[in-house]
Amino acid sequence: MTAGRLLAALVATIVAAAVAVGGARADGDPASDYLIAQQVFFPYDAKVPRESQQRLLAAVRSANEQGFRIRVALIWSDYDLGSVTALWKQPRRYARFLGAELAYSYKGRLLVVMPNGLGFNQPGRDPSAAYALLRRVRVTPTPGGLADAGTEAVRRLAAAAGITVSTVGSGPAPSSRTTRDRAVLAAAALAALLLGAGLRLAVRRRAARAGR
Image 1 (cartoon, rainbow, N blue to C red):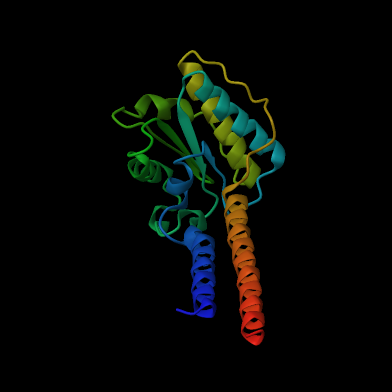
Image 2 (image 1 turned 45 degrees about the vertical axis):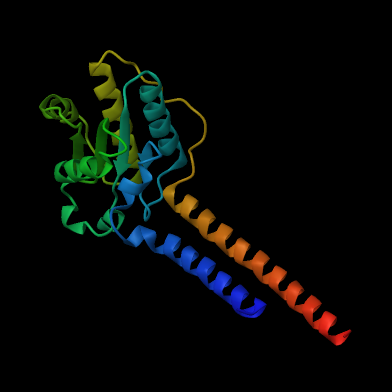
Protein backbone atom coordinates (compact mmCIF):
# COMPACT_ATOMS: atom_id res chain seq x y z
CA MET A 1 0.00 0.00 0.00
CA THR A 2 1.39 3.44 -0.93
CA ALA A 3 1.85 6.18 1.67
CA GLY A 4 -1.05 8.10 0.17
CA ARG A 5 -3.44 5.19 0.37
CA LEU A 6 -2.32 4.33 3.89
CA LEU A 7 -2.91 7.91 4.98
CA ALA A 8 -6.35 7.93 3.38
CA ALA A 9 -7.25 4.73 5.18
CA LEU A 10 -6.11 6.12 8.52
CA VAL A 11 -8.04 9.34 8.08
CA ALA A 12 -11.16 7.45 7.01
CA THR A 13 -10.91 5.26 10.09
CA ILE A 14 -10.58 8.25 12.42
CA VAL A 15 -13.44 10.13 10.77
CA ALA A 16 -15.62 7.05 11.07
CA ALA A 17 -14.77 6.82 14.75
CA ALA A 18 -15.68 10.46 15.27
CA VAL A 19 -19.01 9.96 13.52
CA ALA A 20 -19.64 6.90 15.67
CA VAL A 21 -18.98 8.89 18.83
CA GLY A 22 -21.27 11.67 17.66
CA GLY A 23 -24.03 9.23 16.78
CA ALA A 24 -23.74 7.05 19.86
CA ARG A 25 -26.37 9.09 21.68
CA ALA A 26 -28.97 7.99 19.13
CA ASP A 27 -28.35 4.29 19.69
CA GLY A 28 -29.12 2.02 22.62
CA ASP A 29 -29.62 3.57 26.03
CA PRO A 30 -27.34 6.61 26.59
CA ALA A 31 -27.71 6.74 30.38
CA SER A 32 -26.61 3.12 30.78
CA ASP A 33 -23.33 3.95 29.01
CA TYR A 34 -22.73 7.20 30.86
CA LEU A 35 -23.53 5.94 34.35
CA ILE A 36 -20.95 3.18 34.14
CA ALA A 37 -18.32 5.76 35.09
CA GLN A 38 -20.30 8.84 36.19
CA GLN A 39 -22.73 9.41 39.06
CA VAL A 40 -25.25 11.66 37.28
CA PHE A 41 -26.64 11.61 33.75
CA PHE A 42 -27.91 14.99 32.53
CA PRO A 43 -30.32 15.24 29.57
CA TYR A 44 -28.98 15.91 26.08
CA ASP A 45 -31.70 18.23 24.87
CA ALA A 46 -32.36 20.42 27.92
CA LYS A 47 -30.21 23.02 29.60
CA VAL A 48 -30.19 22.40 33.35
CA PRO A 49 -29.29 25.59 35.26
CA ARG A 50 -25.77 25.52 36.65
CA GLU A 51 -26.94 26.02 40.23
CA SER A 52 -29.29 23.04 40.01
CA GLN A 53 -26.52 20.91 38.49
CA GLN A 54 -24.16 21.87 41.30
CA ARG A 55 -26.62 21.00 44.05
CA LEU A 56 -27.47 17.61 42.54
CA LEU A 57 -23.85 16.67 41.86
CA ALA A 58 -22.85 17.74 45.37
CA ALA A 59 -25.67 15.74 46.98
CA VAL A 60 -24.86 12.59 45.01
CA ARG A 61 -21.14 12.95 45.66
CA SER A 62 -21.74 13.54 49.37
CA ALA A 63 -24.01 10.50 49.64
CA ASN A 64 -21.51 8.22 47.91
CA GLU A 65 -18.61 9.50 49.98
CA GLN A 66 -20.54 8.51 53.11
CA GLY A 67 -21.17 5.00 51.84
CA PHE A 68 -24.68 5.59 50.47
CA ARG A 69 -24.19 4.43 46.89
CA ILE A 70 -26.57 6.07 44.43
CA ARG A 71 -26.60 7.25 40.84
CA VAL A 72 -29.12 9.51 39.14
CA ALA A 73 -30.48 9.77 35.59
CA LEU A 74 -32.40 12.88 34.55
CA ILE A 75 -34.60 12.11 31.54
CA TRP A 76 -36.14 15.23 30.01
CA SER A 77 -37.60 13.72 26.82
CA ASP A 78 -37.79 10.47 24.89
CA TYR A 79 -34.68 11.65 23.02
CA ASP A 80 -32.66 10.86 26.17
CA LEU A 81 -33.79 7.24 26.02
CA GLY A 82 -32.08 6.39 22.74
CA SER A 83 -33.71 3.29 21.29
CA VAL A 84 -35.93 2.56 24.32
CA THR A 85 -38.42 5.37 23.77
CA ALA A 86 -41.25 2.99 24.67
CA LEU A 87 -40.29 3.63 28.31
CA TRP A 88 -40.83 7.39 28.06
CA LYS A 89 -42.92 8.72 30.97
CA GLN A 90 -42.60 5.37 32.72
CA PRO A 91 -39.93 6.19 35.31
CA ARG A 92 -40.46 3.06 37.41
CA ARG A 93 -40.18 0.68 34.48
CA TYR A 94 -37.20 2.59 33.10
CA ALA A 95 -35.47 2.46 36.50
CA ARG A 96 -35.77 -1.34 36.45
CA PHE A 97 -34.54 -1.47 32.86
CA LEU A 98 -31.60 0.85 33.55
CA GLY A 99 -30.70 -1.11 36.68
CA ALA A 100 -30.52 -4.29 34.61
CA GLU A 101 -28.39 -2.55 31.98
CA LEU A 102 -25.91 -1.39 34.63
CA ALA A 103 -25.90 -4.64 36.61
CA TYR A 104 -22.52 -5.83 35.34
CA SER A 105 -20.72 -2.68 36.49
CA TYR A 106 -22.96 -1.13 39.16
CA LYS A 107 -25.37 -2.76 41.60
CA GLY A 108 -26.20 0.14 43.90
CA ARG A 109 -29.21 2.43 44.18
CA LEU A 110 -30.48 4.08 41.03
CA LEU A 111 -32.80 7.06 40.83
CA VAL A 112 -34.59 8.12 37.63
CA VAL A 113 -36.25 11.53 37.31
CA MET A 114 -38.71 12.25 34.50
CA PRO A 115 -41.08 15.23 34.19
CA ASN A 116 -43.97 13.06 35.36
CA GLY A 117 -42.32 11.35 38.32
CA LEU A 118 -39.54 9.30 39.87
CA GLY A 119 -38.27 5.78 39.48
CA PHE A 120 -36.05 3.80 41.85
CA ASN A 121 -34.14 0.57 41.60
CA GLN A 122 -31.79 -1.37 43.85
CA PRO A 123 -30.95 -4.93 42.78
CA GLY A 124 -32.27 -7.54 45.20
CA ARG A 125 -34.25 -4.99 47.25
CA ASP A 126 -37.96 -4.27 47.48
CA PRO A 127 -38.40 -0.62 46.36
CA SER A 128 -41.61 -0.10 48.36
CA ALA A 129 -39.95 1.78 51.23
CA ALA A 130 -38.05 4.01 48.81
CA TYR A 131 -41.21 4.84 46.87
CA ALA A 132 -42.98 5.72 50.12
CA LEU A 133 -40.30 8.37 50.68
CA LEU A 134 -40.29 9.54 47.09
CA ARG A 135 -44.06 10.17 47.07
CA ARG A 136 -43.36 13.41 48.91
CA VAL A 137 -41.00 14.68 46.22
CA ARG A 138 -42.69 16.82 43.59
CA VAL A 139 -41.17 17.18 40.13
CA THR A 140 -41.56 20.55 38.45
CA PRO A 141 -41.57 19.78 34.69
CA THR A 142 -38.63 22.01 33.79
CA PRO A 143 -34.95 21.08 33.31
CA GLY A 144 -34.08 22.73 36.61
CA GLY A 145 -37.08 21.13 38.25
CA LEU A 146 -35.81 17.66 37.35
CA ALA A 147 -32.43 18.35 38.93
CA ASP A 148 -33.97 19.89 42.05
CA ALA A 149 -36.31 16.91 42.46
CA GLY A 150 -33.32 14.61 42.10
CA THR A 151 -31.47 16.51 44.82
CA GLU A 152 -34.44 16.34 47.19
CA ALA A 153 -34.97 12.65 46.46
CA VAL A 154 -31.33 11.82 47.20
CA ARG A 155 -31.52 13.85 50.41
CA ARG A 156 -34.64 12.03 51.60
CA LEU A 157 -33.37 8.56 50.70
CA ALA A 158 -30.05 9.16 52.42
CA ALA A 159 -31.72 10.69 55.49
CA ALA A 160 -33.79 7.53 55.92
CA ALA A 161 -30.49 5.69 56.24
CA GLY A 162 -29.22 8.16 58.83
CA ILE A 163 -27.03 10.11 56.41
CA THR A 164 -27.07 13.87 55.96
CA VAL A 165 -25.86 14.92 52.53
CA SER A 166 -24.33 18.22 51.57
CA THR A 167 -25.56 20.17 48.55
CA VAL A 168 -22.53 22.43 48.46
CA GLY A 169 -19.65 21.53 46.19
CA SER A 170 -17.49 22.48 43.23
CA GLY A 171 -18.76 23.30 39.76
CA PRO A 172 -20.56 20.69 37.67
CA ALA A 173 -18.65 17.97 35.87
CA PRO A 174 -18.80 17.97 32.07
CA SER A 175 -22.16 16.83 30.78
CA SER A 176 -22.50 13.84 28.49
CA ARG A 177 -22.91 16.22 25.56
CA THR A 178 -19.68 18.09 26.44
CA THR A 179 -17.77 14.85 26.78
CA ARG A 180 -19.06 13.66 23.40
CA ASP A 181 -18.10 16.91 21.71
CA ARG A 182 -14.59 16.72 23.16
CA ALA A 183 -14.21 13.20 21.82
CA VAL A 184 -15.25 14.35 18.35
CA LEU A 185 -12.84 17.29 18.48
CA ALA A 186 -10.01 15.03 19.64
CA ALA A 187 -10.63 12.65 16.75
CA ALA A 188 -10.72 15.54 14.29
CA ALA A 189 -7.47 16.94 15.70
CA LEU A 190 -5.78 13.56 15.38
CA ALA A 191 -6.98 13.28 11.78
CA ALA A 192 -5.51 16.74 11.04
CA LEU A 193 -2.17 15.75 12.57
CA LEU A 194 -2.03 12.56 10.50
CA LEU A 195 -2.98 14.46 7.38
CA GLY A 196 -0.19 16.97 7.99
CA ALA A 197 2.33 14.19 8.64
CA GLY A 198 1.24 12.43 5.46
CA LEU A 199 1.62 15.55 3.37
CA ARG A 200 5.11 16.16 4.76
CA LEU A 201 6.07 12.57 3.97
CA ALA A 202 4.74 12.89 0.43
CA VAL A 203 6.71 16.12 -0.14
CA ARG A 204 9.92 14.52 1.14
CA ARG A 205 9.48 11.49 -1.10
CA ARG A 206 8.88 13.65 -4.16
CA ALA A 207 11.96 15.72 -3.33
CA ALA A 208 14.02 12.55 -2.90
CA ARG A 209 12.84 11.21 -6.27
CA ALA A 210 13.57 14.53 -7.99
CA GLY A 211 17.13 14.49 -6.62
CA ARG A 212 17.93 11.07 -8.08
